[in-house]
Amino acid sequence: MAKRTAGKTSGGATVRRQGRRVMPTLRRTAKRARVVAQKAQLTLGEVIAAAFDTAGGEMSGVLELVTSPQMTRALGRRIVVEG
Image 1 (cartoon, rainbow, N blue to C red):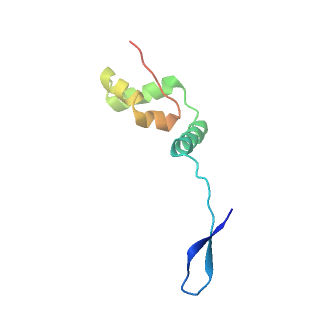
Image 2 (image 1 turned 120 degrees about the vertical axis):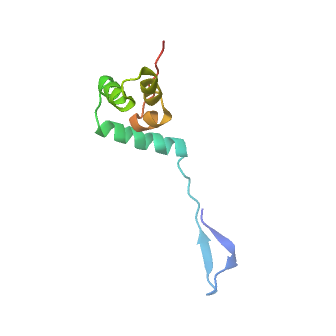
């Protein structure tokens, strides 16, 4: 699989090139988020209580925090609130 490059190095030796497949970015970040989420076992109630503490008890602030992309990445799950 490795190929030789057309050019030579300053020392005169040819350089071998080797390709490698890179894992797509989305799968990498999702896997990392899942590992972090498994370390900290939180219930949905604990997450919402923490959001209320952070938002100062305002419902609109809580909804923004809980449904934010940052929270989705941190938990490795998406929280959907209907209503």
